[in-house]
Image 1 (cartoon, rainbow, N blue to C red):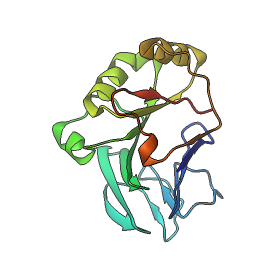
Image 2 (image 1 turned 30 degrees about the vertical axis):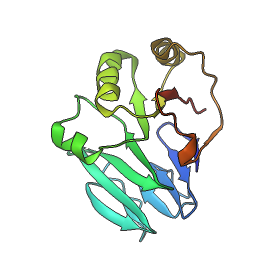
Image 3 (image 1 turned 135 degrees about the vertical axis):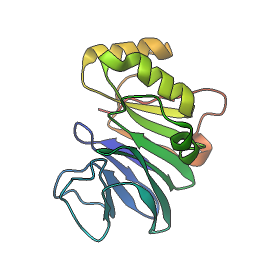
Image 4 (image 1 turned 60 degrees about the vertical axis):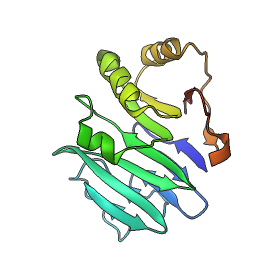
Length: 175
């Protein structure tokens, strides 16, 4: 699987069976489009805009309602469980956590003003791989300090199930 970052909140996941784009700009080529904001107007036969459970192209996709204007997505692709959650304003509820159980890779927005909240959510989810979406160099410096690693940003993250860390969390920064 390959994971790339292409815009402020857009991520593309390319698996063996499908390409998934989350919060993609109009015209993005992908087999499946997911949008965290239910009011998004991009509509195709393979686009989803809110909460629900979907099986598409052999993938299980679970849209978890965060609030009326925000959906987190949990999906299984290439036998790895990925959760994409941005714009969180509070820790996850038990019901939300239950639907995200067993996360291998967490993609989450990290805002300087909400660093404590993001750390709490990361602790709740306990992903094997963390991919933060950040708005500033200050946020990048803080997340590196938190993990105690000087991780350099990369263009594309390639991995397979066997590459997932077992006893630690891996920080991946996409540019």
